[in-house]
Length: 124
Image (cartoon, rainbow, N blue to C red; front, side, top):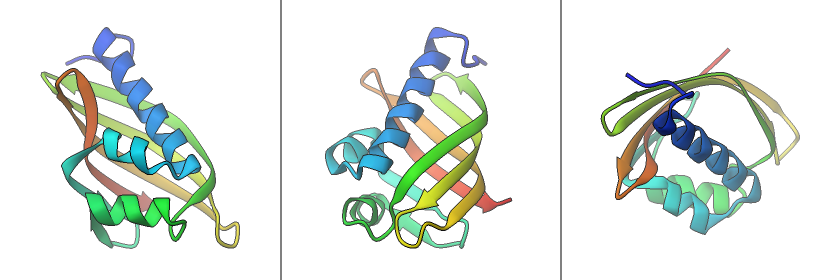
C-alpha cells in the first residue's frame, strides 16, 4: 500500500487537485478526462449520477461551486487503484450555500493516467 508521499500517491494527489480545479472552472473537457467512463458519483443527498450526468451538471452550472477547500486528505494506493478520503468545504454557485462533506473517491490508473471511478459523499 502506498501513501501520498510515494510517486504513485503524489500522482493521485495531483489528479485530485486537477479535479477540484476542473469543478470550479466547470471545465467539461478536463472533467471528462479525469473520470472513468464507468463513473458512479454519489451525492450526500443519496442521488447517484453516471459520468455523463455528473459532467453535464457541472458544465452547465446546475451543480457548480465557486470555491472548494479539501482538508485531512489521505491516499492509499494498491496496485492500480487509489482510495482517497478528505473533508470537503464547498461554496455553491447558486445561493452561496456552504457544504461540508466527508468524501471517499476511488481512482483507477489507466494508460498512466489516474481516473475517478467512484465517489461517495456524506454530510458532516
